[in-house]
Amino acid sequence: GDRAQLIDGKAIAATIRGEIKDEIDRLRSETGGEFNPGLAVVLVGERKDSQTYVRNKKKACDDCGIVSFGTDLPDTATEEEVLEVVKKYNADPKVHGILVQLPLPAHMDEEKILTAISIQKDVDGFHPENIGKLAMRGRKPDFVCCTPKGSVELLERSGVEISGKSAVVVGRSNIVGTPAAMLLQERNATVTVVHSRTKDPERYIREADIVVAACGVAEFVKGEWLKPGCAVIDVGINAVDDATKKRGYRLVGDVHFDSAVKVAGQITPVPGGVGPMTIAMLLQNTLEGAKAARERGE
Ligand code: NDP
Image 1 (tube, rainbow, N blue to C red):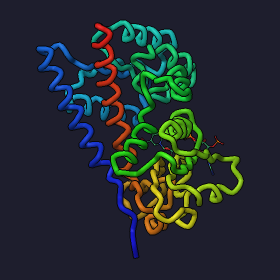
Image 2 (cartoon, helix red, strand yellow):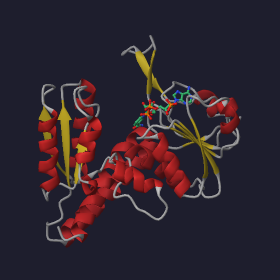
Image 3 (cartoon, protein in one colour):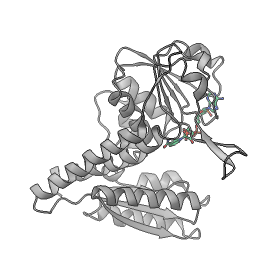
């Protein structure tokens, strides 16, 4: 029977990264080499997964001509030491974006550290002022969180109409579900947010032209719940045991792909959907930060 069209996040992210590189090259030559976007990455502790994310982010910067700066602090660092590093980058005109890799060690106040980042360098978009502006009509945040921004970009680049449509976001976290809902609402969708206390989530999902799944529950959204022809963005990344794989697990999304692909009109795969978009949006935010700094005459 009919199968949904795949939304190829890997290919779309590669296109965007190419566009970013081209724009940086152009601005650099127009300014006689003066335009050099910079991203500072702060890593606290020795978590292997965080180290991998940081390495990938720096590599992605290199590939498109963004200068990366980095500070690695040990697990034993104090909150004050991290705040000092953030302040140093806030004041550094070569740095246009500051990213503090999460999670921070338990003895640190995450909110305090994220709030210390200048909102004009908050390329992760986690500063409460940036999230607050995103929620307000007629205000523009300096930056929008990368994963929700990438999710909406996938819809737009796949020709999915948002305005006037009904959308359901599954999940209401500060960094994914809630900003995704705000972005869709800003683009004139009528948005319902489903969360862990929602009774009968399928009742809402059944009506949705657009479903964004970000609940962190493997294969939560079933194909039978979907409205035929709808667009599905699966943000979830969950490892499930799989003895047939060499590493002993495989990655699945928050949507049951095999049933959903038979009902949806368009769907993102996991992996290869939203995942690659998150880094592409980080690079895009850093470029936007550098352009804004230049317009301010910095
Ligand atoms: P959180 O755990 O912070 O939030 C999960 C949200 O889903 C909460 O709002 C929770 O509700 C809701 N939820 C949990 N269980 C259910 C349920 N049974 N039914 C309905 N809603 C439920 O997760 P994140 O937002 O950080 O991440 C969501 C997913 O996206 C994860 O799979 C994560 O791995 C992935 N992710 C992917 C990224 C990427 O780059 N592709 C980046 C970030 C995350 P409540 O508020 O009531 O607790």
